Length: 183
Image 1 (cartoon, rainbow, N blue to C red):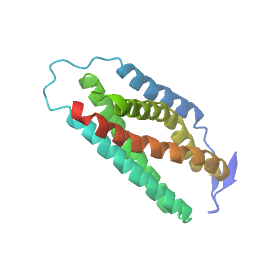
Image 2: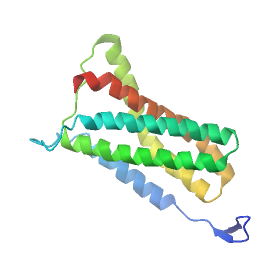
Image 3: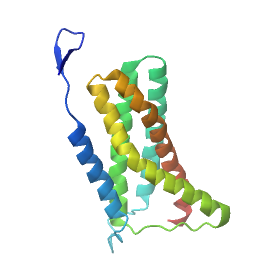
């Protein structure tokens, strides 16, 4: 299907669905597999406990970029919105690299808190994990619809994607803060 972009050039929509499905399965599957991996023994090239801090910093940047993207689109500035979304994708991708690296290199860290804080931690962690898995296909679909200039369909899915992605990036930082004393 071809559309006109307004520049006089024809625009051909692309079918990103197979790529979105493949990337979602690979990323979610790899992270799921890593959750059961005990970690590399005798790894001493560097202190791997720096990686969770990097994860939190990258999640914090993602959150800030998403807030800026949201403000930009509410003001009608699509170009600035797009740039902040791309920045959020970059920091999220870097997060995935450091997250996978840490969980490959280190054993899982148990939460040591008790009582209300343990319940709060596990609620935040479980909702974070479930929504982090959901955000992969949501974010990829949102950007694919924008690339295909399907603006109305993009807006419909972005209304779900943005708050979920904001929640996931914010709770990623919160999970780090809550478990960091136990590393």
